[in-house]
Length: 138
Length: 138
Length: 138
Image 1 (spheres, rainbow over the protein chains, first blue to last red):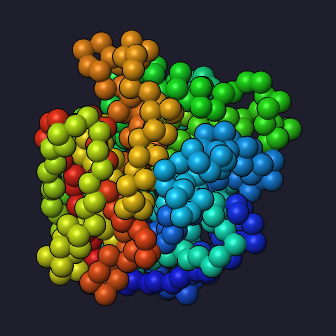
Image 2 (cartoon, chains in turn blue, purple, green):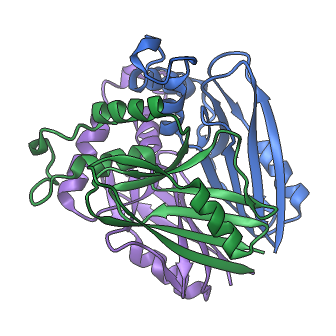
């Protein structure tokens, strides 16, 4: 069994934003030399997400509006977590979007459906944050 | 290390529906010959889900009502994604329900709790769609 | 390839509660002798969750309030599942929080970010329930 590990770094210049990391993950798979296995990709921070959905700007706008409806940022005083911080909503939003994805590796490639794209989802940006890529297989 | 891959195909005759795929996954595990490992099962489409919950029709009705409350299908015009399509709500509903499950394989069987059943969740049906099963182990 | 399996048991004396299981999982990794691999940790019950977030009591209070808003426990009669049971809300809450986490194992340790803590989330307690830990790797 082989294993591979890499950290990806992000610094989103706004509080919230999505970054398509599909190509970066494909590069990781190539670099790993692993042909058959599983890839785990997870946010290492608890106010960020890794998720799979469509790379369509209208849908990304819909996600922003929807997440603000389910877990509004303001007023900050509605959350007990917001004593020294103001990011409780980011913890909740990331819970909806998920921490991690597990993707199959087949024939040395990410085994994704035709519209599946992997995203980093930031909900408390304007700081450097990390994503972990771990691959095991052969 | 052994690996196994299979695609499952579904065509749900309604917009939304759940299909219990637990037995199909058990057949995959048997076919793989893998005794100890991990099984990944994920929707290959971004308006569908694979999730684990109870096989109880009352609960499935509750899920339908609840998902319509959290991410209503209509009016279609409330979503920017709905220019050429009308399925933005399906992308959101699948986000709540999740894309994938990872299940342990122990002694050549799915290592599930007594009430755990695996479902394909369709949120934009009336078309052929795929689920990926990938198993690694020994 | 090595594999490791353990069941963790919980009996939460209230309907809902969170238990930090990070140290227990680290003990599992040590016991397994696995240095590089993947750890799956999942609730074996469909009204409980395993998730990763912050160990901060204000945030845990915010989760409780938020989950009650998204999927209220009462009135019990609002859910069809609540014929012989009263726990439909627990099935929905656990869906938001997630069934499982997959964590990388690197150098014989859980490969977590600085604030990532793993929790057992109970939504229908006052009974004995199980969590599965499965590790594969080398």
